[in-house]
Image (cartoon, rainbow, N blue to C red; front, side):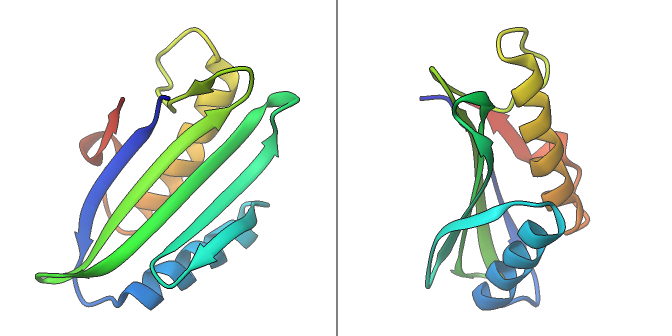
Length: 119
């Protein structure tokens, strides 16, 4: 299973604020909340039958210096792909997922390429 993952600290925010922010981000980007709990929210858009379902999981917990945030992004279709925009296979859904992931972490003042890894 391929995933694109970022982990970072947001100083001065609580986990509840980060998850609330993620839910607001979903509404602004025509995503739906598929699952949520006290420390996570799973956002999705699209369908596995057309261009792939793009999923963005945000996990938040108290950490030293602020809230530790982990963002996991993947595409579900015939196979599961990470959101590497430079890969040829699944290029269109990968780029769409990368745009969402990049937009999300950019709102925290982060450079997406510096915090995400593709696995």
